[in-house]
Image (cartoon, rainbow over all chains, first blue to last red; front, side):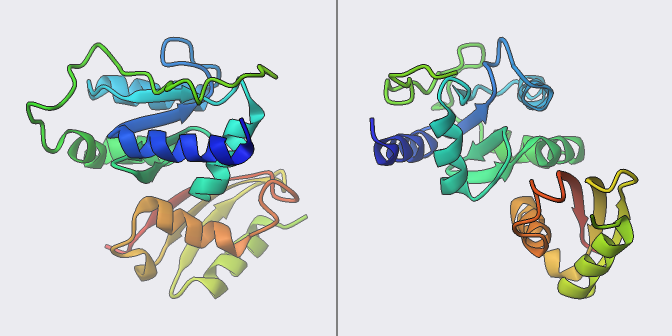
Length: 131
Length: 74
């Protein structure tokens, strides 16, 4: 997969998932304290979210940061917009803004909590595991 | 190597009516709390970007990391 295809796949994942977290590791096994804290907040709010582990291929992080213009991981996107990294997510959680943003309109279409969708359309599973 | 005071000055001279409180005893890791009316109506990401743009090219280099909190005057 070329870097362009990878960037398209990332953009697609951001567009198609209402809430998506790019992180180091997985929600079950975060590989970094900042990612772990961000996952903890999302779980505390009891919302389901898609997640992408950026560690298997360094190009994921490179292309994500080029796309989002944000240097660090994790990165939380809601409805296609970058909400922020760990610090911003923590701050917005504590002020109640995050609950408003991710749980503001609970409707019948919302995916049930407990079965988080995983954003691996195949394209974000790198062919070469350089990690 | 920038001092916390230099970081503060640069933020305050670049962002309109900003006041910054900056700590960073080791000269490479900084914590900054920045208050400016220019943040009003902007997302946190946009607010942080305004501050990070002041140090474009230096973050990750001579400035290893900056933990940011942005506020609008209450």
